[in-house]
Length: 159
Image 1 (cartoon, one colour):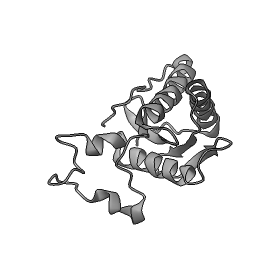
Image 2 (tube, helix red, strand yellow):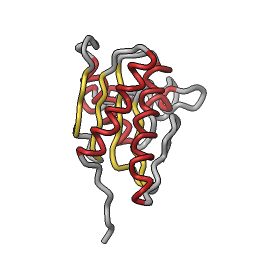
Image 3 (spheres, one colour):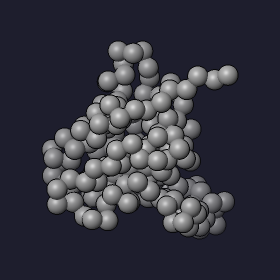
Image 4 (cartoon, helix red, strand yellow):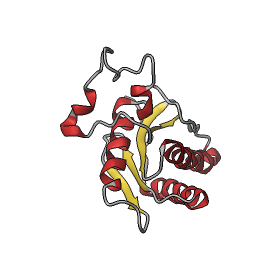
């Protein structure tokens, strides 16, 4: 039997707070979604004034990152992004009733080498969404360091 690490609301809140701090620092209005390992939201927050479409997009990105265990932008990064025309996963973005996101802003949450969830962001450009997503992962890393847990806190994640 395998023991599993589960993401809880406390950690999700910590991550969202860090992403919002970064968004405020760089002057962007974000929607942030933290999902569990099944892709279901633990926390979804839209900053005041952020686009109304942001929450669904953030959820889609988090869902994709958690479920496919890779940062969403890696699907369409040339030349080998699997969702690019001619590559093996071209058209995958139409899977799961359109919930599969293949553009920047979704990152798997990797703790001790296992994907335990995802974080998705929508509202900024790719660089801004990335900065806020990495800030969320870094906050989780810092929070869990005392528990001797290792969190992968970077933009390019592929498990």
